[in-house]
Length: 212
Image (cartoon, rainbow, N blue to C red; front, side, top):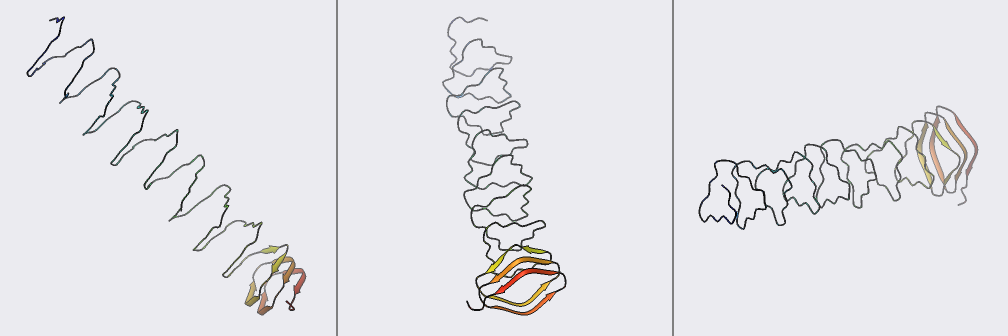
């Protein structure tokens, strides 16, 4: 049947077979589809779209605007983001995270587990460590270092110059390895009750200025 003009159906219309429409189709009301729908071309929606069920996309999806998700989002595969990403809430990652670029954190950072840095680490401000710190390699400090607690050294200590401007009070100094220093200067009182050296102690100059 070929209809050259307008087909107007005021009641219910049922099609038991396929319907082929070669031109444009305009729906001024609601379109309800109870079965599967297959679109061989592009689907363009100029207004809001409400999906109350599951949306399965087998191919690529391109979103030129803003994607807003008010509920949980489950991604079972890889997520590639080429632009900036802003997270207003909490980011929880239960598996490994690989960052190939720079990580900038403007706020506080809390790490409940182990922090492993395989490359160079630079701190431009103060760093506070409330627990124990273990260094298995070398520790090089080019600036001033202030220690408010105890310093225990069980291995080799090498210092080109050591200067103490305050009071040096040591009940026991135990050196189990070698200790080498070219100059040790104490500008205030130095009190040592016991100095025990089981290894080598080499110093060219030991100066204690009690007049300060």
